[in-house]
Image 1: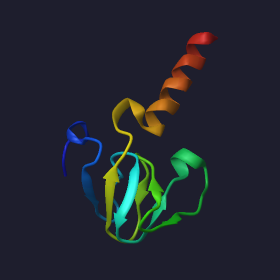
Image 2 (image 1 turned 90 degrees about the horizontal axis):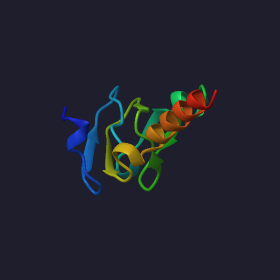
Image 3 (image 1 turned 135 degrees about the horizontal axis):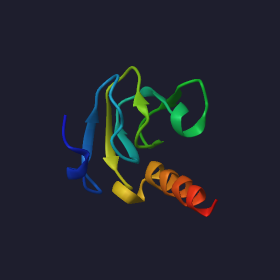
Length: 92
């Protein structure tokens, strides 16, 4: 386990089964299923393998994944969704 604030673009992160993927990125090694329901609303886990994109905040299900960090911090998809929701609430 490491603090997600220490992750920088290009870092390769080992994501164990049951762990949350800390940042958006690309799978560089391994195969697994990822629960993306909190982002996409899709109830079935999505298969992910080398070359596939993964989103921060989603949960690795079965296998070990190595993920090269892409968008981190405020640039991640989850952070952008949170910002849009906050903006929408302020606009009311």
